[in-house]
Length: 391
Image 1 (cartoon, rainbow, N blue to C red):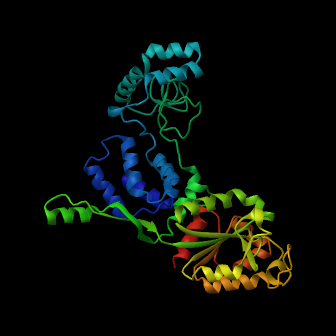
Image 2: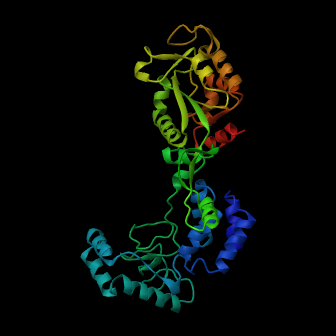
Image 3: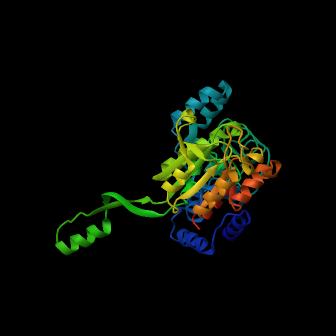
């Protein structure tokens, strides 16, 4: 069964290696799972899943391979206080249903009865009111009904009243192809890391403390600066116009970047980069910064990230005076080429879904100017973008 589990994970594109599988076997031989299916689930997840994005696939494969093993007969346990169950009963159960639960004697009696029936039952059962099976009214099994049931081997909840639900998946929002929130963006941005020790010496240097104590014969506590992300990022954020449709995604990305990168500078532009940028959208007409000043201020070791939908008239990119807001003396393409020439690590993040890029003539044009380094604002796109920036 474990070999089947390993193969199913690989088939579902969860990147598990043979070494990790052998580590799981060693952990099971050492009885690290405690002979409980839930402990085995968390043990396997900890050893086999290296990226949060694969947690949902892992849950689906686990539920498929180990279907029917939700509760082991020798170790049926529950940590739900009985008073909680009574409160739930008051909310959802009829007086007749409450009486039926009382007749069984509450949660402990239900679990005792489950152990006994699992020991007595010899085969699959469907329908009825006693054995553990499907389609009946027993408190145990799947696809039936009982107000105080234990669901075993059922794909999903039907009446939302099972006391114990094994196949509840909590990571559905972590797929590669979905638009993402601030938390998941942070996970993706952490791939862009170059750690260095900076700041005051306030972190315990355990190795240095042990070495110093051994040398001096008394406790010699030593501190060192914390390791921080030394990557420097320069962001250009498109604002206004068609970007109003993508304000939420852009704001989440910016919020995540602010928390992940100590060295982060940002400027706004509209549609395409021209001769000026600005820091505050409310003062964009009165307080601007020459783009040349920005390019001369931040050295070439900065990682440059453009964020915008790249959706505009092609003339705004290719022609002098093509801007919809002012008479630009140089084409937007000229400024983008300058940025790409100065900063080798330079990407464009686009909140428009990749399958729609060819629908707008300006998007392929911007993409070519960026040397093909345009990525969608999804987890998969951010992962590829961070790898490109680290080259």
